[in-house]
Image (cartoon, rainbow, N blue to C red; front, side):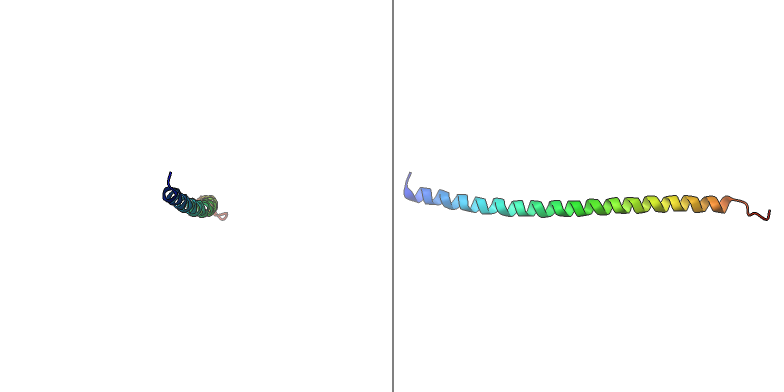
Length: 69
């Protein structure tokens, strides 16, 4: 192998290492965003569930006859 070919390969490897580091950083950021979105979905699910339980309870109160009947 010639010296020029070795230098060219070293340059390509250096660019690939930089690319891998950049991609790793992007994947880590995306995982953090997924974790935050997952927590938000869980929170919203719990809120919706609690609101539906409260709504069912208030509808049952509306259907009851008042005590003066």
